[in-house]
Every structure is written in C-alpha cells, then in structure tokens.
Image (cartoon, rainbow, N blue to C red; front, side, top):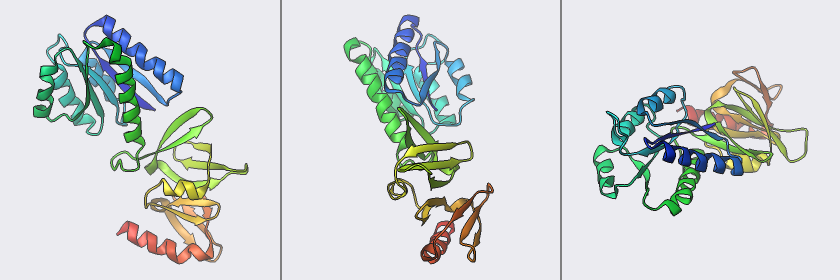
Length: 248
C-alpha cells in the first residue's frame, strides 16, 4: 500500500484536499490510502515512522506552527529520502526556497488557482505511482500487478519466484508476504524485472538471490523459504553464469 500524507493548517482546505485524493483513489481503485491528514506537522512525522515504504506528501508551506512546510519536508527527507513531496501554497515567490533547502519537491501547486487543484493533485498521484512502480527505481523497486480491478505494488526484493498457474494465462507471484495470482505470461513478466530474476523453466522465473541449492540430477532449485522451482537442462549453464555475474 502506497501511503499519502496531507499537512494543511486550514481545516476546510485540509478536508477538501483529502476528499479530492480519496475520491480519486476510490474511482481508480488504487492500492494507496491517505494515512494522515493533519494540521500538525509533528503528527505527520509520527505517522510516517510506521511506514517503511516511500510516500507522497502534500504540504502547505505556512503551517501556523513552530515548523513550516520546508522544515517539515527536511525532516521527512531524513526518514524517506525517495518520497514524493508536493508543496501547496499561496506564495509562488517561496518556491525558490525549496531549491535552497534541497528537499527535491516533485511539484508546486498554487491555491489561488482552485479550479486546477483537483487535476494537479491527481496528476501528482499518477506521477508518483509511475515512479514508485518503475523498474528504474533503484531504492524501492516494485512490481505492479493487476488483480481484478486493483493495481497491487509488490516489492521486488520480496519476490521469491513467479510460476505458471493451473489456470491458462495466469501467473502466481510468490513473495514472503503472500501469493498473488494475476494474468500474464512469464516471458512478458521477466522483461519487467531486473537482472536478479531468471527464466529457469518454461513454467518458472526464479529470484537468484533466494537460491539455496541447485539439484542438477533432479532438475530442481531449492529456495531459502523452502519453495522449489524446476529448471531445464538447457538453462543450467546460463543460470550458473547469471548467478556468478549477479553476486559479483
């Protein structure tokens, strides 16, 4: 689940922003939620401690507190260096300060353009999700899979293997948290993954970092979680080479 935070000292605007975001999440059926909407920056930081995944932060700059939006963003960055920060403000002249503070804001939305607010906020959500799910995200790589009408983001480092399901055109994604069933093919899936994954058999993709043992006689791989995966004779030498390259 992708967490979203909102910090705004105007309670009417806070409620309005939260409604825009929650409606969009509901309509698009996204695997995300507003985990904290508050006028208190300290509460944002307290809730943030509960989540290890990067988040999306909509922050007012003037917060009527001993901590303004820039100071809050700096503290957020210490815990969440790859999070996505969006400033919502009435003061466009303050934008340059974020560059001085080096908080790497993803966007700036002006409150004096209320008609554009919903579109700008939902665009930020779309961009954050795209970057979060991107294979180029070297800090928190995730695999986006569609289950029914929902998009689920599975951390790549938690995936042990991906196998063909008993149902045609369906796959089983096995992670240390759960087993997900989705539509797709192994050849399509392996293209979306990084070099830690290898198509070892026509029915299985294995995560090289979780291989515990390779039984060449019986043509199976034992994984660290106790799972086993088949491999083909043809793939054996390539798999060994890929493992050496990966761990080196």
